[in-house]
Length: 288
Image (tube, rainbow, N blue to C red; front, side, top):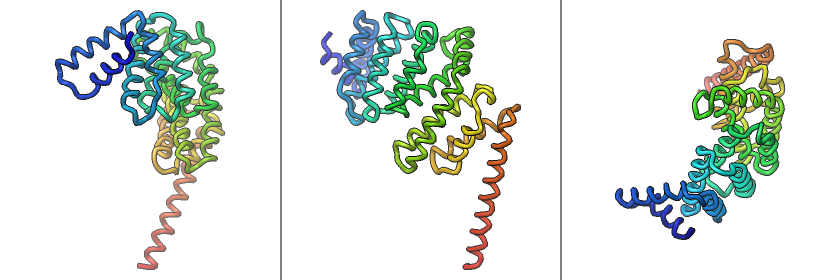
């Protein structure tokens, strides 16, 4: 298979070309996805040198993900080799690949886990945690996608299989939430740093997704509650995500006793804010 010709087709198809030509190129690319050597082609395209601003590399990585998505959906061949290749790519390419590609690759890892974990692959979470030792934000993205997909009633997974996945995930939740708490505390130590903010956002997204469908008594602790609440007065995306976590807890018709601590935090913060606003108002009245 001529890699240079394939990359030229991918770029031409995704760049501007007339409708008739685009249809021809899309047909050729579909044939490549179904080719007996499609997986090897995906590996070659994924191995291309990458840069966030390199459109050619981004297009080729996108097509590699579309090949893997097709193979996973068809359960064609050795899915473990795809998972291992993707995890290796994520380990070495964090920061050099667009978030769009990272999210698509994370979904591929989770889609394979939905098929294999824990019977065929008991090491899904250990593998993600190992990735987090060097790429914490990326590992959080994989966990967030897993929380979304395992908690959703949509998708191609049977009801029985989804229930089994949820049970295994809940069984491992204490460790996962401890890990997210560690990530948030680590990021808080680097407050103001762009990388720390990215880790904070991605970890809060994981916590939020589990709060959506897991019983609170299974995923909430005093220490995690306190850690999340420390971010609620932060500006921007971090503050919004922390507030969303708190809002999700308060929206439950039943909440464990631990939530009383949260309410104490909420009311205490409201009074502090009101007190600050009152002092601010008095100050300006004095000088106006």
